[in-house]
Length: 331
Image 1 (cartoon, rainbow, N blue to C red):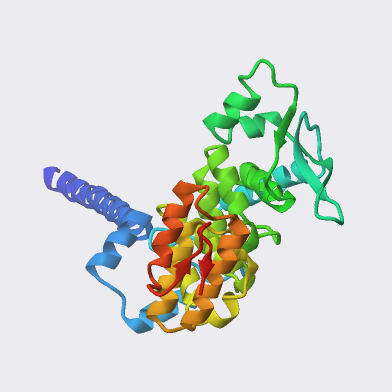
Image 2 (cartoon, rainbow, N blue to C red):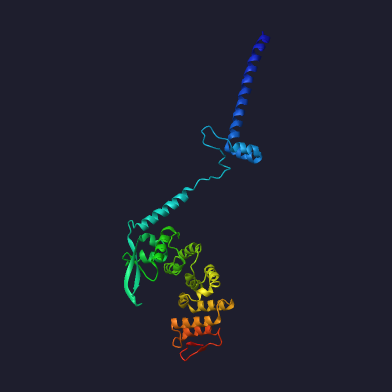
């Protein structure tokens, strides 16, 4: 009887044992499958067992059932989409320019004084060019602007300017609104105006941004001498100075007749004359004539001793040049 019971129990135990073994194996297979296809395990596997070139091509050519295109591991491939931040910055820039150019809800104005010139060369009437803008934008441009238009209890909504061009004021405003200089009005001839606005309102970044834009252009010769005068007066503009000199030396015969030479400071004139002498770019007689023209245009004689003393230092480059009783050059 006991043997019969054992014969009945053994098949049942064997069956239960087989079920347990199959369950364990099934669980191990499922765990291994999950581990194999998890992003972390795939990344680890790709490092330990890199695919061959054929396997890589096969993987890249795979298209899922939805027809969406090649699939790739987001952990290994950088995103090629345009940043939403870049889109929002560009959109914000355009919106701010629209508010400026269309004068939407403006609460402030810039009045640019303009003096007309009569046919006889005398000063004519005074007029104003008006630029609508927003007080809060001006106030955030610099501490100086904040003091002038926001903290000033007597500010009446009008900021007056003079001595600069309308084009420079427009570029000045657009920079305040967008932190960029990207205007068709950019030109070398207004670099002095941009410099004045940049310094007057303590916005040095404006000058830097303007120069980065203007140096991409071809510079007209008639604007080079004033730009050089600016660079020579101010420290920290070596690139502007060198760019100007690259044009001043080979174009000396043309620039010697440029009227802008009569308006530059004595130190700039002295440097240019020495440069042309050293390179034999201009005949000596023509340089002496240039000094005579500069002297007449600026009224340099013994009466204004301080300025005239600097002028005589340039004359010393030409030992045989004589002066009359009033200090005028004679040959």
